[in-house]
Image (cartoon, rainbow, N blue to C red):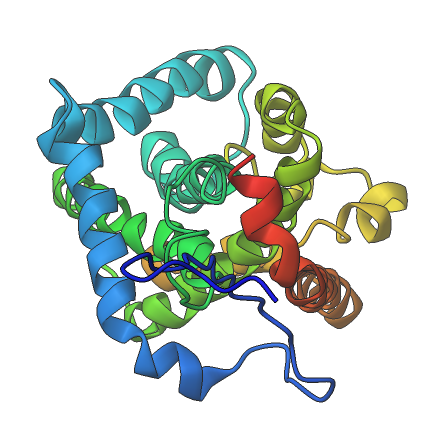
Length: 286
């Protein structure tokens, strides 16, 4: 038997393997709460990159919806005479752009949240915190845009009603829908890196079929049920009602259809994320 020479230490390589419990829930709230400091750090990094390390960080958050609203006001409000349901069209469009801009932010940031982070193979933490940080960090943009919307409402003499108290709940619905899609894109992008190249085109199509710049009343009746499968339809209508007091012209079936699709995307996304979580370090850091 050959023994090791004295003074020479054998080096062993340790490897951590994440094995999910067979009865593990889709979202382990207790575990996420125990790693809340990690979430805070990820959100701070998200905000720092967004604002502190860019030349026009905060200014771009303000200019982007304002410039888009100005273009839509000329094209849709004046030339195409798109109805605004009794409110000035700039208010109608800007209010709709706030949840849509947040939605696109979450999809873009979540899509790359698992790629080359340098964290997946170094320490264990719930991987769901990465797309969750993208969703939470984007709420800062909502607050900034909400302040601009308040100024516009003062300018146009529009006063909010009691529905304003439900605005956070309506935005939470937008956040859940965005998070569901963001989780799907984050995991899919691990295996198909060209997803992020197709995402801008998909969001352009999504903007056209989402009532951010026009009311749902312009959609022909025969297409309404199919149109209501858009998971952003109900949350945006809820948000616009809470801010501007515009009554949503949705039937109970259209409300149910929109919320059901959003819930299906969220639940299936969490299931897919949990299934792929054990191999994310190998795929994401390769």
